[in-house]
Amino acid sequence: MPLTEPYDDHLPQEDPVALDGALGNPDDNVVNDTSGASGPTGDGPAAEPEPTLPEPVRQRIVTLTAAVLPTLPTDEVPVPLRRVAKFAPNRRARLGAPVIAAQLTADPLFRQRVTARVLTDAGDLGAAVVEGTAPAAADPVEVAALAYLARPRGWRELIDASGAAVRAEADSAVVAELVREAEQRATRAEHDRAVARVEAEKLRDELARVREELGQLREESRQVARTLRETQARERKATELLATERGRAARASADVDAELRRARARLAEAEATAGVARASAKEARSVDDARLWLLLETIGQAAVGLRRELALDPVDKLPADFVADAFAEQPGTAPAGPAARARDTDDPARLDQLLALPRAHLVVDGYNVTKRGFGEMSLEQQRKRLITGLGGIAAQTGDEVTVVFDGAERMHGLPPAPRGVRVLFSRKGETADELIRRLVRAEPGGRPVVVVSSDREVADGVRRHGAYPLGADSLLRRLARS
Image (tube, rainbow, N blue to C red; front, side, top):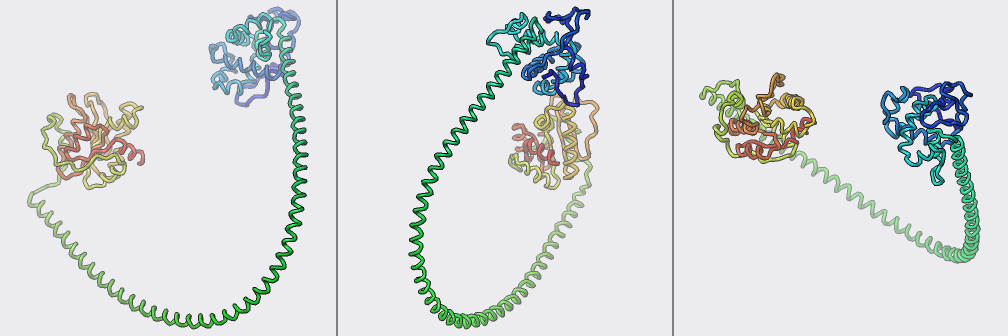
């Protein structure tokens, strides 16, 4: 069959005339077929037509060319094949076969470049084909493919010999298949005859068994007739007993109806008693509600009076703001907090529970979280993504949020933080861990402070000052969920 075949629409199509023409000019610089080839000027006789290639040979030529395409410089690859050269290896020979075949036929210089690399890869076999000989043990398809590309003296005879070998193999395979099918049919026929003999024996045995069973059934039929007569007599007696029992059941049903009416009367009396009990319970609940309201009102008025007595005005700064304004303060000077208010936990649901506490303060170890969750980004992108996510948490919960990063001296032109989020950077000589501990020590006892960091030293330090340490994974899952 010809070297070319139909091709997908997304690759450039070649002129069919070019595909069916001669396979290159006789001025190829690899090895030329001297049998009937003309000189480089084209003054000699016309080039011979392309030979009809067996399908395995055509496929092998395309596969060899596709394998060397990526190794060629871009300027040596024809324009229609530059896109094919970028395909994956398993798609290059399959999708680019028509274009590769067309270029091998129409572009002798391209075929020469491909042949040089293919012969180098073929080694001794390539050298033998260039000399016009083929080893006896060599694959005829491989020899024909190399001969087509190199085109030494007698290359058409090599291709014809390959076609004959391929056809002989195909004919041998067909004959072997026919013999195998005939043997299978003979085996099946013998098997069918054996099965028929066995089935005939089974049918004869079955006929004898059926006759024997027929005699048994006749005897059983006589016995069943006698049993039927006896059963009919017992049925008549049972009918008489049933009529007697029905009378007894009717009397028992009347007694049950009377008992049911009495039970309904007792139920109505019980429902009335329950209604009275519910009314009494509702009245008692109303008294308890009034007492509770009065107690809460008294507590609220006492709190207002205490605030007035202490002259406490509304504050515009929180404890963490004082820590942010006092970077020069030495670590360890703030008063120690009360005993630890929580135990370490990595449960993601624990973060939601803690943020639901009134006036909670969320402190985040910035780079500890970002490098664990999205460390493939730049530091600027990590900070921006974390601060944006914390802004959403602050907007949803209304809690105070502080995120701490290392290295304030390297930060320039930071974007404004979202509302409710405080961004702090440790100064030179101070780490973010130390700044986090100072933030926790500055909080009053009793206020829920949640510190998010997977650093064990940070978690142990803030726990001693009464904060709730959580792992970075809990915050990352919370951010992913929102």
